[in-house]
Image 1 (tube, rainbow, N blue to C red):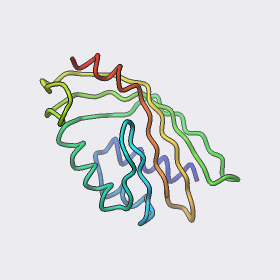
Image 2 (spheres, helix red, strand yellow):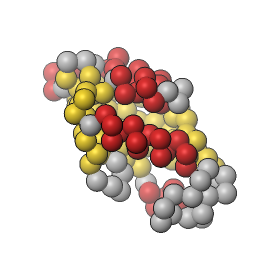
Image 3 (cartoon, rainbow, N blue to C red):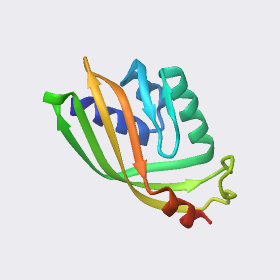
Image 4 (cartoon, helix red, strand yellow):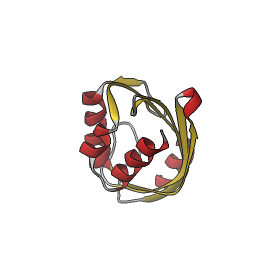
Length: 130
């Protein structure tokens, strides 16, 4: 189970949305920080396109936790980013750099991720880019 999570994050760092999608079930539930739930690969791909336009992020210091008996995994990491294009309702983008501790939680079934939940301190991000 940790293998699919590792591949997912390797694809994220490679900025390879197609490879990320290959790690997901067709009906994946994507719970974003400070937002709602997006369902399905198409909604996830749209989210990734938007994020790629507004942010350039690389994840470091990755630790993956695995609980195969429960069909779950988690990861803790540091987001190293640059704010590229102003995101609606957020501070103006001017190429600001930011660094945030974050975590993601996963449900995994049949070798695919069925749920992704990501959490980070949004107030800290706003402070760093303001």
